[in-house]
Length: 313
Image 1 (spheres, helix red, strand yellow):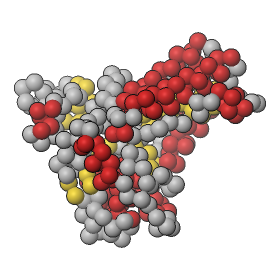
Image 2 (cartoon, helix red, strand yellow; image 1 turned 135 degrees about the vertical axis):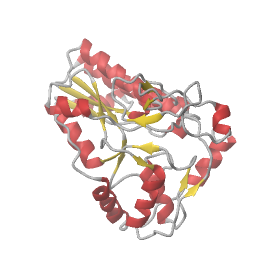
Image 3 (cartoon, one colour; image 1 turned 90 degrees about the horizontal axis):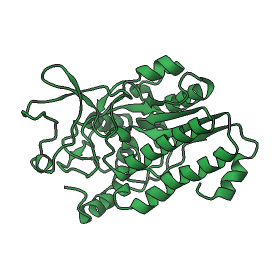
């Protein structure tokens, strides 16, 4: 909420705040720059202005794995290095995987919070701004603040008709309309998919603990899956095994190749331990999806919009 009066009313009598509100999506952020900046950046600043005048006992704020850009990798010498941004010429050749300066392959590994942030999209920049603003103001005004870098959260009650929301929601919208999922590149890009139940648990733990005040925490499952594998497993859970993913061989500006969570810090500081396996989570999601009357598939329209703006190759 950007309306200071509405926020002031919402904060009346409140001693702790979970700031989760944001517009989401990498692709859309690249052509709705003002909207993403106004809602995410200015909206957070508006909240913090009020908290500076009337501090609360705790602030937990939603950041995002998108702030990392590419995740961490291991090079041919066994050294851990941050993933470099892929070049346009590389992407046009369909060379999706990362390599070093000598064209040797880089192997993806779990990404810890110490990895420098790269911010490849307007959305990523807005979430980093949200995170840093909150930690800075929290420290200045004595508000214990924790930034939660959520990885790919999924679960019941996701928005199914926004083609820029989570990967599983996008895949589900296609499958529910009996259309094959559309997956960029070759489908082997790896992500960390974390159940909404574990996300909620992490938020509660961060609220109750003082060990993580003033820092950012990864919130993921600690495991990685390829996007193609996720599509196949969701199709199976929905009884649509024959609906095989369509690999587009396309690239979207702002996308990265691999990024999945090292959750060591969250384990140590707030006692976070994921409790929902992907198998359990996707079955629960499929059960909820089976009761949904409709999901508008806007994936192809979004792809056309990005292509028309030169944001998809």
